[in-house]
Image (cartoon, rainbow, N blue to C red; front, side, top):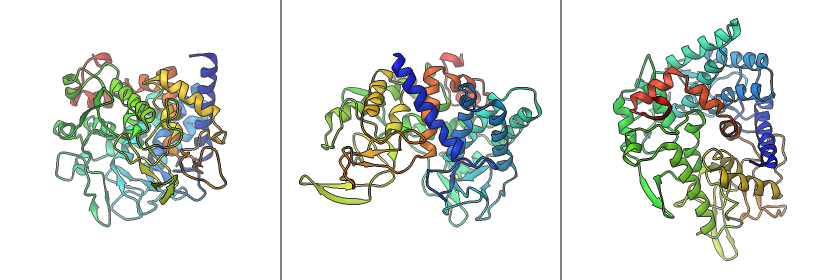
Amino acid sequence: MTPEQCELLGTLQKDAFSYYTYQTNPANGLVRDKSQDEWPASIAAVGLALASYPVGVERGYMTREAAAQLTLATLRFFATAPHGPEPDATGHKGFYYHFLDMKSGRRALESELSSVDSAFLLAGMLTAAMYFQWETAEEEEIRSLADALYRNADWQWMQNGAAAVSHGWTPEKGFLRYRWHGYDEALLLYLLGLGSPSHPLPAASYRAWASTYKWKKLYGIEFLYAGPLFIHQLSHVWIDFRGIRDNFMRQHDLDYFENSRRATLVQQQYAIRNPRGFAHYDEYCWGITASDGPGPKKLKIDGIKRVFHDYIARGVPFGPDDGTLAPWAVVASLPFAPEIVLPTIQNYERMDLEATWAYGYKSSFNPTFPAQPKHEHGWVSSYNYGLNQGPIVLMIENHRSGMLWALMRQCPYLVTGLRRAEFSGGWLD
């Protein structure tokens, strides 16, 4: 990297980390889902924050003492929060509601008990346990609480009688009708579930999930397909997939890291081809994922009928795609394809995207949408999201030092999960 690129990454990382400084309740560690007043916390954002605090210590954004105190406040909250089938609890069966009230910590927005968001939360807790290894009372308590909270998750209950894991549960309607099938962000969920010493998923659960994978060839690139970019990133925040393979990847002589690289290249190729004719898509302007958007709205622009969405999982090349791009998602692909990510980040810096905010990039923008007042690059989201900020912090760090990957390679539960999913090779051997 050039000195200019190193400086740019350092600024992006520090700005993204500051979200957790200002959007976290220090009394309970809950992190606001998005930067909107009175908005609830997201448990996935809490998990990413817990994983980010060690980076904050090592990069000088906060002291180790402050990070330990905030981490301990978070773990103590989840250890003592109301837990049970009541509709206003914080969690049930070792899983937690997707959204929680920032102050009380109880269920918000009538949300579901989310299996995958709970996995992100638990991954953050395990990160804390691996980092805070000093023989002090505080750090010993962090390790003890994180271990107990991970062991509480009843993964077998979340299967609801079938092999694949349910998306979640509500006290009003029971288990959700959807299960985790096909390649998606649930890779981390299955590996944590397989590694549990108390309520482990059976190996057949992972096989049922992987049996629904879709292998595709797009723009001459063969890879395990998923349309939104975040799917190829979130599990990689914690797990170093370089050189380790499960049965599926062995059959294709590939690993999940290289697969994410190929998915990143497909994103760029889609933008270069720009089949739907959206404004500004090109070699250095791409990044389509789950993100905020300017809709819902239908407009005719330059004689073309356009449908714009609000928050939705966008993907390539099959859509949905409404011209909305997410700069944060480009940054989160940095370890996979730095040769195309770094020039794209530099391009976004040169663009007048009003990106110099308290927390760095806003979540997304849409240059096709006719924003008012008129802006050269169209609509720009009003918000930052806790789920976006963490991947910026952590994937920049994984690219720079491999810090989080190194920590989690030492996590016995994750190693057990990988082995039970029949991963082998690389650092596992």
